[in-house]
Length: 249
Ligand code: CAA
Image (tube, rainbow, N blue to C red; front, side, top):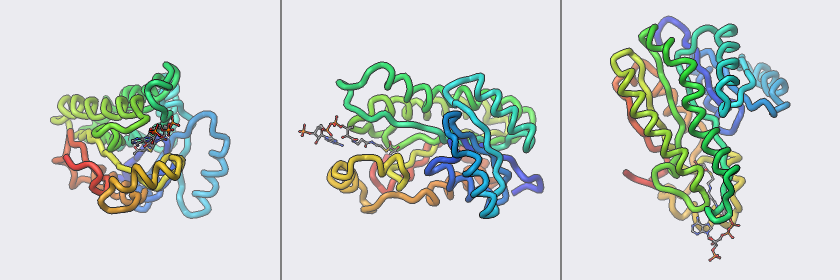
C-alpha cells in the first residue's frame, strides 16, 4: 500500500459478505467505514463487538436506494475518516419469486437497492477520486447477473446492469488513476444463500457447482483486496467471476 492509509467505504458492511470484507480490509491496513440500513438497530452492538475484537470501524446509517441518504452518509464518513479512496458497492437484497408471482414493489425494491445504489453512492465519491488522481470502485454483482437464476428476474436484471455501469464508468475515468471493476460471486455461505430452501439448494444449486461447495466470504474479500491494491492498477472494466466453476465465460 502507499504511505497514506487509504480509506474504504463498504456498503452493507455489516452483512454476511460485508463484515468479512471489513475485517479483511482492516487486516490489510485500510481505514474502513461501513453503511448499514437505517432500520438496523443492532449497529451500536455490532460496532462495539468489532472494536472488542480489535477492529475500529465507522458505521453510518444509509439507505443506498436513496440519493440524499447516500450524500449524508458519505459526508459523515468524510468527517470521520477523510476522503474515500475505495468504494465497495456491496449492499444488496433479494426478493426471490417466480416472475408470474412478482409484483412491481418487489421488482422496484431490488432494482433500487442493487442497481440505482451504484449511481447514488458512486456519485458522491467519483469527482474526488478523479481530482486526487487515485481511486477504486468495486461493484459486487453476482453469477446470476451473467447466467440468470430461477426466481430472480429482478435480481438478475439489476446485477446484469451493474456490469454495464462498471464498463461505462471505467472508460470515463481510465486516464484519471481510477479503476472501476465488477466482481461476480457465485453462491457464498452467507445468510442470503442459506435462506434458500434447503431442498432447492441441495438439489438444484449445489450440483451446478463443480467445486461441490459454497464459497467462503474470505475468498471474496481476498479478491476485493487485490482490486483495491496498487498492483491492480491495470485491471479496469473487468468482471471477475468467483463462483467455484458454476458459470465459465
Ligand atoms: N431450477 C429449476 N426449477 C426450479 C428451480 C430451479 N433453480 N427452483 C424451483 N424450481 C421448480 C420447482 O422444482 C417446482 O417445479 P414443479 O412445479 O414442477 O414441482 C417449480 O419450480 C416451482 O417451485 P417452487 O414451488 O419452489 O416455487 P415457489 O414460488 O414456492 O419458489 C423460488 C420459487 C422462490 C424461486 C424458490 O425456488 C427459490 O428460493 N429458489 C432459489 C432462488 C435462488 O437461487 N436465489 C439465489 C439467492 S442467493 C443470491 O442471490 C446470491 C447470489 O448472488 C448468488
